[in-house]
Image (tube, rainbow over all chains, first blue to last red):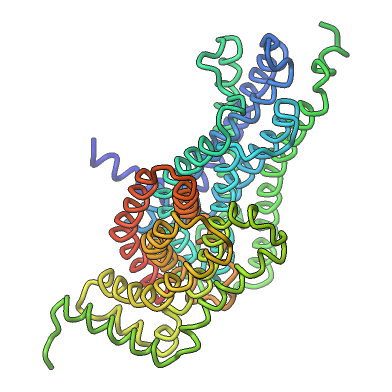
Length: 248
Length: 65
Length: 227
């Protein structure tokens, strides 16, 4: 079993194999994403009942919360790739690491914008120094740091390793930053800010949220595969498999 | 529920629809830009390989890791 | 040639870096001057109302300390990188994280520690509550080494770049956030007569965590940068 896994792992990590596989998967993933998106949107915008406290404005959570989840999840993916890059020097992991960063940054950006658009009707202002918004903002800076560092180093193999170290350092720091900000927030804001999450959320609101979260995950894979394919072509432009692929 | 009621979102239309609109734009861009880049890479490589076979010398065979 | 033991190598490197820094007095004074200047700007910007200044003093002092520490970071490895000493260091038989720790310690001794000397003066000028002076010094003592240690990772990652400075700040400042939060809040609490043990124990935890982890990351980043 383990031997089989190692073999699969190496095959999966080979650029031509991954390029072809990703190309085969993309249409299926896009179909799955469309179904999930339509289901999630219908459940969230039409079926879910109006919230008795927040009115219709709460419907923003169906994009806000999945985007915020994705922003954390993608950083974790990056740190995991970072470990693979540093330990096994796997080319595919380098490409995935560098390609995941812009997607993660855009999800973080989306979470911030929708969070403040939600804040306006809830709190009366677009921005409050709420613990979650603040740590999301810092997370955005961490993403921008990764993108900036990757862009600044010309040799992309070296750049990928630099970014791998940075992603792992960031991963160690994210929980610390998160809890520091939460602690800071409880100190300065008290209970004036109404918390987003109630202890229990009705099932009719929860299932669209979960479906949307799943849709965003599938979307991340689609976007990642697209980027990785483009990047692989560029990086491996001098190899035989790319030549054969282009000529055929 | 009527159509206008649905679009009105209980008076929160601006916030809700801006959020969904932005989400749509971000998702679309993240799909479209890599798609475009991939297509352009293919086109560029195609031109390169057709114009000359000079790639032969610079080719390195370490594509498999 | 006699081989140095690990602790000998550590002390040797530390002494060498300190000597080099002491010979170059202006580099020693610059972060300190910067620290004082930034703090001077605040009363000019927000007005000299004593209550307001006393309220925001902990935050101002710590933001200035953060910036001063960040500006001086580049000096940790810069000259050694340029004259090739760093490459020799990486090739030596000693574990690189220990050597990194020696260099970071030297850097902290010449840039972080002097802040201790001027901080009370500035606190007095800003009208900080007198009960908080001890805690202010303690947070600087505990916090600035963390800044140097985290910063060394960023410097090691960007050392080979021509325009590394702006990226360095982007990499390092978000990671400084916990130190800023806990140290400023400790001083705040002390000025208000509250207990600060929670903040101080958190800062101790940060110090030990960064002491143990960051030299490893810095060493890895240096090896990557030199390759």
